[in-house]
Image (cartoon, rainbow, N blue to C red; front, side):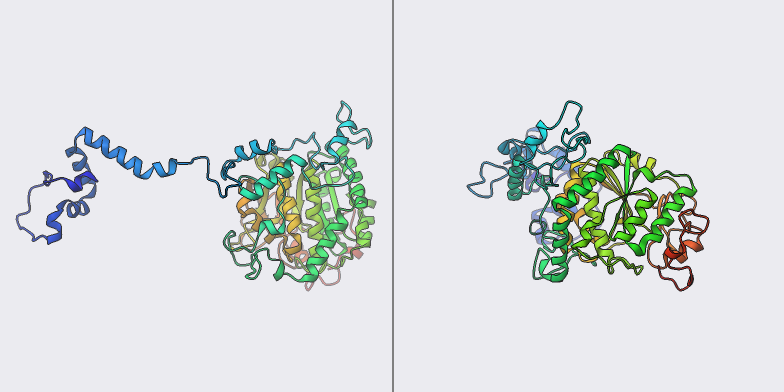
Length: 500
Protein backbone atom coordinates (compact mmCIF):
# COMPACT_ATOMS: atom_id res chain seq x y z
CA UNK A 1 0.00 0.00 0.00
CA UNK A 2 2.86 2.40 0.86
CA UNK A 3 4.70 1.61 -2.37
CA UNK A 4 1.60 1.82 -4.52
CA UNK A 5 1.12 5.47 -3.64
CA UNK A 6 4.36 6.24 -5.50
CA UNK A 7 3.81 4.05 -8.59
CA UNK A 8 4.15 6.04 -11.84
CA UNK A 9 1.10 4.62 -13.59
CA UNK A 10 -2.35 3.49 -12.47
CA UNK A 11 -2.94 -0.19 -11.94
CA UNK A 12 -5.12 -2.11 -14.29
CA UNK A 13 -8.56 -2.83 -12.92
CA UNK A 14 -10.60 -5.92 -13.83
CA UNK A 15 -13.76 -3.85 -13.67
CA UNK A 16 -14.98 -2.24 -16.96
CA UNK A 17 -14.77 1.55 -17.19
CA UNK A 18 -17.87 3.56 -16.43
CA UNK A 19 -19.89 4.70 -19.48
CA UNK A 20 -20.31 8.12 -17.98
CA UNK A 21 -17.05 9.82 -17.21
CA UNK A 22 -16.91 11.73 -13.98
CA UNK A 23 -14.70 14.82 -13.66
CA UNK A 24 -11.83 14.30 -11.29
CA UNK A 25 -10.62 16.87 -8.84
CA UNK A 26 -7.15 18.29 -9.57
CA UNK A 27 -5.71 16.84 -6.40
CA UNK A 28 -7.02 13.39 -7.34
CA UNK A 29 -5.34 13.36 -10.77
CA UNK A 30 -1.91 13.41 -9.18
CA UNK A 31 -2.71 10.35 -7.08
CA UNK A 32 -5.81 8.50 -8.29
CA UNK A 33 -4.90 5.53 -6.12
CA UNK A 34 -6.00 7.32 -2.96
CA UNK A 35 -9.51 7.89 -4.30
CA UNK A 36 -9.74 4.32 -5.54
CA UNK A 37 -8.46 3.06 -2.21
CA UNK A 38 -11.30 4.63 -0.26
CA UNK A 39 -13.84 3.25 -2.74
CA UNK A 40 -12.46 -0.30 -2.71
CA UNK A 41 -9.87 -0.57 0.08
CA UNK A 42 -9.32 -4.33 0.24
CA UNK A 43 -9.37 -4.77 -3.55
CA UNK A 44 -6.85 -1.99 -3.99
CA UNK A 45 -4.50 -3.41 -1.33
CA UNK A 46 -4.58 -6.74 -3.14
CA UNK A 47 -3.79 -5.06 -6.46
CA UNK A 48 -0.92 -3.13 -4.92
CA UNK A 49 0.70 -6.28 -3.55
CA UNK A 50 0.17 -8.05 -6.87
CA UNK A 51 1.81 -5.25 -8.86
CA UNK A 52 4.85 -4.85 -6.62
CA UNK A 53 7.69 -7.32 -7.19
CA UNK A 54 9.04 -9.75 -4.62
CA UNK A 55 12.16 -7.72 -3.82
CA UNK A 56 10.20 -4.54 -3.41
CA UNK A 57 7.68 -6.32 -1.17
CA UNK A 58 10.46 -7.63 1.09
CA UNK A 59 11.97 -4.16 1.36
CA UNK A 60 8.59 -2.67 2.20
CA UNK A 61 8.02 -5.24 4.99
CA UNK A 62 11.46 -4.55 6.43
CA UNK A 63 10.73 -0.83 6.35
CA UNK A 64 7.40 -1.27 8.13
CA UNK A 65 8.95 -3.50 10.81
CA UNK A 66 11.74 -0.99 11.36
CA UNK A 67 9.36 1.93 11.73
CA UNK A 68 6.71 0.34 13.95
CA UNK A 69 8.45 -2.45 15.87
CA UNK A 70 12.02 -1.29 16.42
CA UNK A 71 11.16 1.44 18.98
CA UNK A 72 9.32 -1.13 21.11
CA UNK A 73 12.18 -3.59 20.85
CA UNK A 74 14.71 -1.11 22.21
CA UNK A 75 15.55 -1.51 25.92
CA UNK A 76 13.20 -4.44 26.58
CA UNK A 77 14.54 -4.75 30.13
CA UNK A 78 13.32 -1.31 31.10
CA UNK A 79 14.81 2.10 31.52
CA UNK A 80 16.52 3.94 34.33
CA UNK A 81 14.84 6.85 36.01
CA UNK A 82 18.02 8.37 37.42
CA UNK A 83 21.76 7.87 37.44
CA UNK A 84 21.61 6.20 40.87
CA UNK A 85 19.01 3.71 39.67
CA UNK A 86 20.51 3.10 36.24
CA UNK A 87 21.58 -0.41 37.17
CA UNK A 88 18.06 -1.53 38.06
CA UNK A 89 15.34 -1.74 35.34
CA UNK A 90 11.88 -0.53 36.32
CA UNK A 91 9.85 -3.41 34.93
CA UNK A 92 12.17 -6.28 35.80
CA UNK A 93 11.29 -8.00 39.08
CA UNK A 94 14.07 -10.52 38.46
CA UNK A 95 16.61 -7.71 38.36
CA UNK A 96 15.30 -6.34 41.63
CA UNK A 97 15.58 -9.76 43.25
CA UNK A 98 19.09 -10.15 41.86
CA UNK A 99 20.10 -6.78 43.27
CA UNK A 100 18.74 -7.58 46.71
CA UNK A 101 19.57 -11.26 46.78
CA UNK A 102 16.23 -12.71 47.84
CA UNK A 103 12.60 -12.94 46.81
CA UNK A 104 9.47 -13.46 48.89
CA UNK A 105 7.63 -16.75 48.33
CA UNK A 106 4.46 -16.68 46.27
CA UNK A 107 2.75 -19.10 48.60
CA UNK A 108 3.22 -19.49 52.33
CA UNK A 109 3.14 -23.14 53.44
CA UNK A 110 0.97 -24.00 56.40
CA UNK A 111 3.83 -25.87 58.07
CA UNK A 112 6.05 -22.77 58.32
CA UNK A 113 5.66 -19.70 60.55
CA UNK A 114 4.49 -16.72 58.56
CA UNK A 115 4.97 -13.64 60.73
CA UNK A 116 8.58 -13.58 61.81
CA UNK A 117 10.59 -10.56 62.80
CA UNK A 118 14.26 -10.18 61.97
CA UNK A 119 15.15 -10.30 65.68
CA UNK A 120 13.33 -13.57 66.34
CA UNK A 121 14.01 -15.44 63.09
CA UNK A 122 17.32 -16.85 64.30
CA UNK A 123 16.03 -17.65 67.78
CA UNK A 124 13.05 -19.60 66.47
CA UNK A 125 15.35 -21.97 64.58
CA UNK A 126 17.16 -23.05 67.70
CA UNK A 127 13.92 -23.58 69.64
CA UNK A 128 12.43 -25.98 67.09
CA UNK A 129 12.87 -29.75 67.16
CA UNK A 130 12.84 -32.17 64.23
CA UNK A 131 9.09 -32.79 64.48
CA UNK A 132 8.33 -29.15 63.70
CA UNK A 133 7.20 -28.20 67.24
CA UNK A 134 8.52 -25.22 69.15
CA UNK A 135 10.17 -26.49 72.34
CA UNK A 136 9.40 -23.33 74.31
CA UNK A 137 5.67 -23.06 73.65
CA UNK A 138 5.03 -26.69 72.62
CA UNK A 139 3.00 -25.39 69.65
CA UNK A 140 3.32 -26.36 65.98
CA UNK A 141 5.21 -24.01 63.70
CA UNK A 142 2.00 -22.85 62.03
CA UNK A 143 1.26 -20.99 65.27
CA UNK A 144 3.45 -17.93 65.80
CA UNK A 145 6.20 -18.68 68.31
CA UNK A 146 7.75 -15.22 68.67
CA UNK A 147 6.75 -12.87 71.46
CA UNK A 148 4.84 -10.48 69.21
CA UNK A 149 3.06 -10.47 65.86
CA UNK A 150 5.79 -8.47 64.13
CA UNK A 151 4.85 -7.10 60.71
CA UNK A 152 8.45 -7.10 59.46
CA UNK A 153 9.39 -9.73 56.89
CA UNK A 154 13.06 -9.94 57.83
CA UNK A 155 16.08 -7.92 56.83
CA UNK A 156 16.19 -9.22 53.27
CA UNK A 157 12.54 -8.53 52.53
CA UNK A 158 12.85 -5.05 54.01
CA UNK A 159 15.65 -4.38 51.51
CA UNK A 160 13.51 -5.78 48.74
CA UNK A 161 10.63 -3.57 49.80
CA UNK A 162 12.86 -0.48 49.63
CA UNK A 163 13.72 -1.45 46.06
CA UNK A 164 10.02 -2.03 45.30
CA UNK A 165 9.08 1.33 46.81
CA UNK A 166 11.45 3.04 44.40
CA UNK A 167 10.35 1.18 41.29
CA UNK A 168 6.80 -0.12 42.03
CA UNK A 169 7.26 -3.42 40.18
CA UNK A 170 5.37 -6.64 40.78
CA UNK A 171 3.51 -7.61 43.94
CA UNK A 172 4.64 -5.69 47.05
CA UNK A 173 6.74 -7.85 49.41
CA UNK A 174 5.50 -5.83 52.38
CA UNK A 175 2.20 -4.19 53.34
CA UNK A 176 1.63 -0.64 52.14
CA UNK A 177 1.34 2.30 54.49
CA UNK A 178 -1.27 5.05 54.14
CA UNK A 179 1.33 7.28 52.49
CA UNK A 180 2.33 4.59 49.98
CA UNK A 181 -1.20 3.51 49.06
CA UNK A 182 -2.42 7.06 48.20
CA UNK A 183 -6.04 5.97 48.01
CA UNK A 184 -7.26 9.50 47.22
CA UNK A 185 -4.77 10.17 44.42
CA UNK A 186 -6.96 10.65 41.33
CA UNK A 187 -3.98 10.05 39.04
CA UNK A 188 -3.44 6.57 40.45
CA UNK A 189 -6.85 5.36 41.67
CA UNK A 190 -10.24 4.90 40.06
CA UNK A 191 -12.63 7.51 41.47
CA UNK A 192 -16.12 6.12 42.01
CA UNK A 193 -19.19 7.24 43.90
CA UNK A 194 -19.10 6.13 47.55
CA UNK A 195 -15.34 5.71 47.29
CA UNK A 196 -12.35 7.52 48.76
CA UNK A 197 -12.20 11.20 47.83
CA UNK A 198 -10.02 13.95 49.20
CA UNK A 199 -8.98 16.79 46.90
CA UNK A 200 -6.59 18.34 49.43
CA UNK A 201 -4.70 15.18 50.41
CA UNK A 202 -3.86 12.15 48.19
CA UNK A 203 -3.45 10.00 51.32
CA UNK A 204 -7.03 10.82 52.51
CA UNK A 205 -5.92 11.65 56.05
CA UNK A 206 -6.90 15.33 56.03
CA UNK A 207 -10.47 14.50 55.02
CA UNK A 208 -11.14 12.10 57.91
CA UNK A 209 -12.44 12.94 61.35
CA UNK A 210 -9.34 13.43 63.53
CA UNK A 211 -11.04 11.76 66.48
CA UNK A 212 -11.75 8.52 64.59
CA UNK A 213 -8.25 8.40 63.09
CA UNK A 214 -6.75 8.77 66.57
CA UNK A 215 -9.03 6.10 68.06
CA UNK A 216 -8.29 3.64 65.25
CA UNK A 217 -4.53 4.01 65.71
CA UNK A 218 -5.01 3.58 69.44
CA UNK A 219 -6.98 0.36 68.86
CA UNK A 220 -4.26 -1.07 66.62
CA UNK A 221 -1.63 -0.28 69.22
CA UNK A 222 -3.60 -2.01 71.97
CA UNK A 223 -4.46 -5.00 69.75
CA UNK A 224 -0.79 -5.60 68.90
CA UNK A 225 0.50 -5.23 72.45
CA UNK A 226 2.43 -8.13 73.96
CA UNK A 227 -0.31 -9.12 76.41
CA UNK A 228 -3.01 -9.27 73.73
CA UNK A 229 -0.77 -11.21 71.34
CA UNK A 230 -0.02 -13.82 73.98
CA UNK A 231 -3.73 -14.18 74.76
CA UNK A 232 -4.62 -14.76 71.10
CA UNK A 233 -1.71 -17.11 70.61
CA UNK A 234 -3.09 -19.43 73.28
CA UNK A 235 -6.50 -19.49 71.55
CA UNK A 236 -4.90 -20.19 68.16
CA UNK A 237 -2.94 -23.08 69.66
CA UNK A 238 -6.11 -24.79 70.92
CA UNK A 239 -7.90 -24.03 67.66
CA UNK A 240 -5.06 -25.55 65.65
CA UNK A 241 -5.21 -28.78 67.61
CA UNK A 242 -8.96 -29.33 67.23
CA UNK A 243 -9.96 -27.49 64.07
CA UNK A 244 -11.16 -28.86 60.78
CA UNK A 245 -9.89 -27.50 57.46
CA UNK A 246 -11.33 -24.00 57.82
CA UNK A 247 -11.92 -21.48 60.60
CA UNK A 248 -15.25 -19.61 60.72
CA UNK A 249 -14.73 -16.21 62.36
CA UNK A 250 -17.34 -13.60 63.30
CA UNK A 251 -17.21 -10.38 65.26
CA UNK A 252 -20.17 -9.54 67.52
CA UNK A 253 -21.31 -7.41 70.41
CA UNK A 254 -24.19 -7.88 72.82
CA UNK A 255 -26.73 -6.36 70.44
CA UNK A 256 -25.84 -8.88 67.69
CA UNK A 257 -25.93 -11.97 69.89
CA UNK A 258 -29.42 -13.06 68.77
CA UNK A 259 -28.32 -13.06 65.09
CA UNK A 260 -25.24 -15.17 65.87
CA UNK A 261 -27.42 -17.60 67.80
CA UNK A 262 -29.81 -17.75 64.83
CA UNK A 263 -26.91 -18.90 62.61
CA UNK A 264 -25.84 -21.41 65.25
CA UNK A 265 -29.36 -22.79 65.75
CA UNK A 266 -29.78 -23.07 61.97
CA UNK A 267 -26.57 -25.09 61.61
CA UNK A 268 -27.62 -27.42 64.41
CA UNK A 269 -31.08 -27.78 62.89
CA UNK A 270 -29.69 -29.18 59.61
CA UNK A 271 -26.88 -31.14 61.25
CA UNK A 272 -23.76 -29.04 60.46
CA UNK A 273 -21.01 -29.36 63.06
CA UNK A 274 -19.33 -25.95 63.45
CA UNK A 275 -18.27 -26.07 67.09
CA UNK A 276 -14.67 -27.17 66.56
CA UNK A 277 -13.97 -24.63 63.81
CA UNK A 278 -15.79 -21.46 64.94
CA UNK A 279 -13.96 -18.51 66.47
CA UNK A 280 -15.94 -15.55 67.81
CA UNK A 281 -14.49 -12.08 68.44
CA UNK A 282 -16.73 -10.43 71.08
CA UNK A 283 -16.32 -6.78 72.03
CA UNK A 284 -17.77 -6.98 75.55
CA UNK A 285 -17.21 -9.30 78.50
CA UNK A 286 -20.85 -10.35 78.88
CA UNK A 287 -20.95 -11.70 75.32
CA UNK A 288 -17.58 -13.42 75.83
CA UNK A 289 -18.81 -15.22 78.94
CA UNK A 290 -21.97 -16.38 77.15
CA UNK A 291 -20.00 -17.80 74.20
CA UNK A 292 -17.48 -19.56 76.43
CA UNK A 293 -20.37 -21.10 78.38
CA UNK A 294 -21.60 -22.68 75.14
CA UNK A 295 -18.13 -24.16 74.59
CA UNK A 296 -17.07 -22.13 71.54
CA UNK A 297 -13.69 -20.54 70.91
CA UNK A 298 -13.59 -16.81 71.62
CA UNK A 299 -10.91 -14.14 71.91
CA UNK A 300 -10.97 -12.58 75.36
CA UNK A 301 -11.92 -8.89 75.09
CA UNK A 302 -9.33 -7.73 77.62
CA UNK A 303 -8.39 -4.97 75.19
CA UNK A 304 -11.78 -3.32 75.88
CA UNK A 305 -10.49 -2.33 79.33
CA UNK A 306 -8.42 0.34 77.56
CA UNK A 307 -10.70 0.86 74.56
CA UNK A 308 -14.42 1.28 75.09
CA UNK A 309 -16.78 -0.20 72.45
CA UNK A 310 -20.50 0.53 72.46
CA UNK A 311 -22.34 -2.83 72.95
CA UNK A 312 -25.52 -1.49 71.30
CA UNK A 313 -26.44 -2.56 67.76
CA UNK A 314 -29.08 -0.42 66.02
CA UNK A 315 -29.41 -2.61 62.91
CA UNK A 316 -27.34 -0.43 60.56
CA UNK A 317 -23.84 -1.12 59.29
CA UNK A 318 -20.99 1.03 60.59
CA UNK A 319 -23.06 2.70 63.31
CA UNK A 320 -22.09 3.03 66.97
CA UNK A 321 -19.95 0.03 68.02
CA UNK A 322 -20.32 -1.84 64.72
CA UNK A 323 -17.40 0.07 63.17
CA UNK A 324 -14.97 -1.26 65.82
CA UNK A 325 -16.46 -4.76 65.57
CA UNK A 326 -15.49 -4.77 61.89
CA UNK A 327 -12.00 -3.51 62.71
CA UNK A 328 -11.16 -6.25 65.21
CA UNK A 329 -12.69 -8.84 62.85
CA UNK A 330 -10.27 -7.68 60.14
CA UNK A 331 -7.33 -7.84 62.56
CA UNK A 332 -8.32 -11.37 63.59
CA UNK A 333 -8.57 -12.50 59.97
CA UNK A 334 -5.05 -11.21 59.37
CA UNK A 335 -3.69 -13.08 62.40
CA UNK A 336 -5.43 -16.31 61.35
CA UNK A 337 -4.23 -16.11 57.74
CA UNK A 338 -0.70 -15.34 58.91
CA UNK A 339 -0.84 -18.44 61.12
CA UNK A 340 -1.75 -20.72 58.21
CA UNK A 341 -5.53 -20.90 58.67
CA UNK A 342 -7.97 -20.67 55.78
CA UNK A 343 -10.71 -18.34 57.00
CA UNK A 344 -14.45 -18.00 56.43
CA UNK A 345 -15.21 -14.45 57.60
CA UNK A 346 -18.91 -13.68 57.73
CA UNK A 347 -21.43 -11.29 59.24
CA UNK A 348 -23.76 -12.54 61.96
CA UNK A 349 -26.87 -12.00 59.78
CA UNK A 350 -25.97 -15.09 57.74
CA UNK A 351 -27.97 -18.32 57.49
CA UNK A 352 -26.55 -21.56 56.12
CA UNK A 353 -29.08 -23.59 54.14
CA UNK A 354 -26.36 -26.18 53.42
CA UNK A 355 -22.73 -26.57 54.43
CA UNK A 356 -20.78 -24.33 51.97
CA UNK A 357 -17.30 -25.46 53.03
CA UNK A 358 -16.85 -28.33 50.51
CA UNK A 359 -17.79 -25.98 47.67
CA UNK A 360 -15.50 -23.21 48.97
CA UNK A 361 -12.49 -25.50 49.29
CA UNK A 362 -12.88 -26.61 45.69
CA UNK A 363 -13.58 -23.12 44.34
CA UNK A 364 -10.61 -21.61 46.19
CA UNK A 365 -7.99 -23.77 44.46
CA UNK A 366 -5.50 -21.42 42.82
CA UNK A 367 -7.19 -18.36 44.31
CA UNK A 368 -6.61 -16.05 47.25
CA UNK A 369 -9.92 -14.37 48.08
CA UNK A 370 -13.53 -15.36 47.37
CA UNK A 371 -16.43 -13.10 48.33
CA UNK A 372 -20.16 -13.00 47.79
CA UNK A 373 -21.55 -10.46 45.35
CA UNK A 374 -22.47 -6.88 46.15
CA UNK A 375 -24.51 -5.93 43.04
CA UNK A 376 -23.35 -2.31 42.99
CA UNK A 377 -21.55 -0.16 40.44
CA UNK A 378 -20.01 2.29 42.91
CA UNK A 379 -17.07 2.09 45.27
CA UNK A 380 -18.92 -0.38 47.53
CA UNK A 381 -18.88 -3.22 44.99
CA UNK A 382 -18.55 -5.79 43.62
CA UNK A 383 -17.09 -7.58 46.65
CA UNK A 384 -19.42 -8.14 49.60
CA UNK A 385 -17.40 -8.37 52.79
CA UNK A 386 -20.37 -9.93 54.58
CA UNK A 387 -19.10 -13.32 53.42
CA UNK A 388 -15.47 -13.95 52.47
CA UNK A 389 -13.24 -16.98 52.04
CA UNK A 390 -9.59 -16.06 52.67
CA UNK A 391 -6.87 -18.51 51.66
CA UNK A 392 -3.67 -18.54 53.68
CA UNK A 393 -1.30 -17.26 50.97
CA UNK A 394 1.44 -14.67 50.84
CA UNK A 395 -0.71 -12.39 48.71
CA UNK A 396 -3.70 -12.59 51.07
CA UNK A 397 -1.53 -11.77 54.08
CA UNK A 398 0.01 -8.69 52.45
CA UNK A 399 -3.44 -7.57 51.27
CA UNK A 400 -5.06 -7.91 54.72
CA UNK A 401 -2.11 -6.28 56.45
CA UNK A 402 -2.43 -3.32 54.08
CA UNK A 403 -6.15 -3.16 54.86
CA UNK A 404 -5.30 -3.05 58.58
CA UNK A 405 -2.88 -0.18 57.95
CA UNK A 406 -5.66 1.67 56.10
CA UNK A 407 -8.24 1.24 58.88
CA UNK A 408 -7.67 4.74 60.36
CA UNK A 409 -8.95 6.30 57.11
CA UNK A 410 -11.63 3.78 56.16
CA UNK A 411 -14.47 5.60 57.86
CA UNK A 412 -17.53 3.48 58.63
CA UNK A 413 -17.33 1.04 55.72
CA UNK A 414 -14.88 -1.84 55.65
CA UNK A 415 -16.53 -2.99 52.40
CA UNK A 416 -15.56 0.23 50.64
CA UNK A 417 -11.97 -0.14 51.85
CA UNK A 418 -11.53 -3.71 50.63
CA UNK A 419 -13.08 -2.94 47.24
CA UNK A 420 -10.80 0.06 46.77
CA UNK A 421 -7.77 -2.07 47.63
CA UNK A 422 -8.85 -4.83 45.25
CA UNK A 423 -8.86 -2.22 42.47
CA UNK A 424 -5.49 -0.83 43.56
CA UNK A 425 -2.77 -1.08 40.95
CA UNK A 426 -0.35 -3.09 43.13
CA UNK A 427 -2.96 -5.69 44.16
CA UNK A 428 -4.03 -6.72 40.66
CA UNK A 429 -2.14 -10.00 41.20
CA UNK A 430 -4.46 -10.99 44.06
CA UNK A 431 -6.48 -13.92 42.72
CA UNK A 432 -9.94 -12.64 43.57
CA UNK A 433 -13.27 -14.11 42.47
CA UNK A 434 -16.94 -13.45 43.13
CA UNK A 435 -19.00 -16.40 44.35
CA UNK A 436 -22.13 -17.20 42.29
CA UNK A 437 -25.20 -15.30 43.44
CA UNK A 438 -27.33 -18.40 42.93
CA UNK A 439 -25.42 -20.19 45.73
CA UNK A 440 -24.42 -17.28 47.97
CA UNK A 441 -27.46 -15.09 47.69
CA UNK A 442 -28.85 -11.95 49.28
CA UNK A 443 -32.19 -11.70 51.02
CA UNK A 444 -33.70 -8.95 48.89
CA UNK A 445 -36.45 -8.66 46.30
CA UNK A 446 -34.07 -9.00 43.37
CA UNK A 447 -32.25 -12.21 44.35
CA UNK A 448 -33.97 -14.17 47.10
CA UNK A 449 -37.11 -15.25 45.16
CA UNK A 450 -35.01 -16.52 42.23
CA UNK A 451 -32.40 -18.43 44.27
CA UNK A 452 -34.47 -19.73 47.17
CA UNK A 453 -34.07 -23.37 46.09
CA UNK A 454 -30.38 -23.28 45.11
CA UNK A 455 -28.84 -21.11 47.86
CA UNK A 456 -26.18 -22.49 50.18
CA UNK A 457 -25.74 -19.26 52.15
CA UNK A 458 -28.34 -16.51 52.67
CA UNK A 459 -27.28 -13.02 53.73
CA UNK A 460 -30.00 -10.93 55.38
CA UNK A 461 -28.80 -7.54 54.18
CA UNK A 462 -30.36 -4.17 55.05
CA UNK A 463 -32.52 -3.56 58.15
CA UNK A 464 -35.40 -5.39 59.88
CA UNK A 465 -33.47 -8.61 59.68
CA UNK A 466 -35.39 -10.48 62.37
CA UNK A 467 -38.78 -9.68 60.85
CA UNK A 468 -37.70 -10.73 57.35
CA UNK A 469 -36.01 -13.91 58.58
CA UNK A 470 -39.19 -14.88 60.42
CA UNK A 471 -41.32 -14.18 57.33
CA UNK A 472 -39.15 -16.47 55.20
CA UNK A 473 -39.02 -19.19 57.86
CA UNK A 474 -35.29 -18.69 58.41
CA UNK A 475 -35.49 -17.54 62.02
CA UNK A 476 -34.12 -20.58 63.88
CA UNK A 477 -33.60 -18.59 67.09
CA UNK A 478 -36.95 -19.58 68.60
CA UNK A 479 -38.33 -21.79 71.33
CA UNK A 480 -37.39 -24.95 69.43
CA UNK A 481 -33.66 -24.09 69.67
CA UNK A 482 -31.77 -25.29 72.73
CA UNK A 483 -29.93 -21.93 72.99
CA UNK A 484 -33.03 -19.74 72.90
CA UNK A 485 -33.26 -17.09 75.59
CA UNK A 486 -36.15 -14.66 75.59
CA UNK A 487 -33.96 -12.00 77.17
CA UNK A 488 -31.70 -12.03 74.11
CA UNK A 489 -34.54 -11.67 71.60
CA UNK A 490 -34.88 -7.93 70.87
CA UNK A 491 -38.08 -8.40 68.89
CA UNK A 492 -40.04 -10.62 71.25
CA UNK A 493 -42.48 -7.84 72.21
CA UNK A 494 -42.56 -5.94 68.90
CA UNK A 495 -42.22 -8.31 65.96
CA UNK A 496 -43.64 -5.85 63.42
CA UNK A 497 -41.86 -2.62 64.38
CA UNK A 498 -38.50 -4.17 65.36
CA UNK A 499 -35.69 -2.85 63.13
CA UNK A 500 -33.05 -5.37 64.26
